[in-house]
Amino acid sequence: MAECIFCRIVAGEIPSEIVYRDDEVVAFRDINPQGPVHVLVIPVEHIPGIREADPSKNALLGKLMTVAAKLAEEEGIADSGYRLVINQGPDAGQAVFHIHLHLIGGRKLSWPPG
Ligand code: 5GP
Ligand code: ZN
Image (cartoon, rainbow, N blue to C red):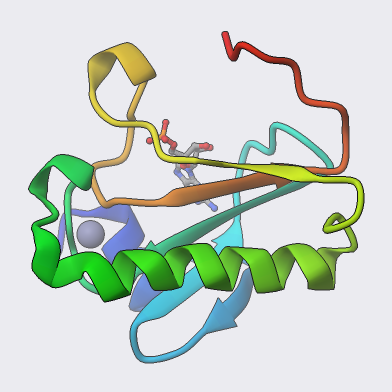
């Protein structure tokens, strides 16, 4: 989707600090980090949100999780812990409608979230 900011990051049309890339998944640092580590893990395929993901996407969505876990090891936050978050819809404050998994860590995270 030409107007999607994350599709444009995948295409290299908008600069970002990419930390992982393969044919299906791209991960890059969040422009407005909410912790010392804040990486967004996204599918190359444009899926607006978890609401639009049917079971044919199970493997792809699972891969977002395992890529995030691998990145957490590389970023040095696997022992201290981290949070994986998908914001869906208005009450969660979803701002970008290309599904993304937030990997946030490097500080103590409060619960419940705000
Ligand atoms: P959401 O609220 O949709 O779950 O999160 C969207 C995230 O994308 C936010 O954390 C925001 O900082 C990040 N973001 C928005 N635009 C850009 C951008 O152009 N580059 C990068 N690296 N992150 C972005
Ligand atoms: Zn997109």
